[in-house]
Length: 343
Ligand SMILES: Nc1ncnc2c1ncn2[C@@H]1O[C@H](COP(=O)(O)OP(=O)(O)OP(=O)(O)O)[C@@H](O)[C@H]1O
Ligand SMILES: [Mg+2]
Image (cartoon, rainbow, N blue to C red; front, side):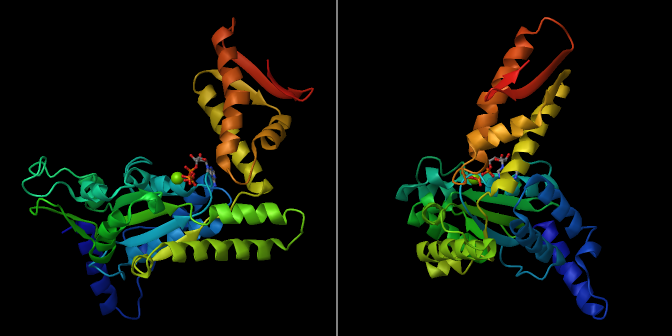
């Protein structure tokens, strides 16, 4: 049995004993929810309430009040493309495990047919592969270890076949998956399960377009966006599946402010990467404005911005570095006559 879960239960017993001295999240093995929140908000911009919800889920698991016979927490992240759903899970892995890629990611769009349900639990006895207990799951990253929870990400969950979702239902319910060879089990009881989805995003985008000319209070706009997405999620999943998810978090589409912050962050990251290679790049403010006007569409979130930065800035900069005659290289990017130039 995973050590961390044991530890939570031990904590639980201790805090039950000292009833008038409740265990705050900070006292549980040095876990600091505020530090986690700061860290996630610095990486995932403009999604404060999504970050809050995830920090809350992690904090609850840390205090040890969650059901011991289930995963630590299961959180569904829903929203349009390129708004930070997958990236938030990667940042949680960076904070709780050894790095952003230290998680078990299952691409559910690759499991769109019925027979793929088997690839979750491996081949049944008598079939090729049954001895190897092959499964898509990476046991070490799921089960974690002492002081380290596991993390599983089911990306684009709505694209999977219904039979795959049924297999998953059992995992959400019992925190265990018995492999089809019948000999082994994978435990998810020390794991955070994250699921991502774009459900409802097309409808929200269509409404946004229709509404563009009509002004509306931002708060009301956000509330109706939330209810459209939640409606789409509840309609899509069977109630028995939906009811086993601890928390559904709706991400906001980018507005201009978030788009500008993400643009500055992406450009800042590029400047830092170049600096590590002894290339100084000065970026004029006009470039931020240019990237936003060319690359920002609320439907594509950060994806459009990143694409524009790549073609309009990164590529000319790389070329300038390759062809520079003097070292160290010092470059300046600015917008002149409506074109981005790197000199
Ligand atoms: N809110 C954000 N703050 C900072 N960077 C972001 C944000 N959203 C997206 N990005 C950047 O864009 C990239 C793509 O984002 P991500 O993979 O998280 O999108 P997604 O919401 O999972 O979209 P999809 O539904 O298409 O999978 C990330 O690697 C990140 O660098
Ligand atoms: Mg994603």
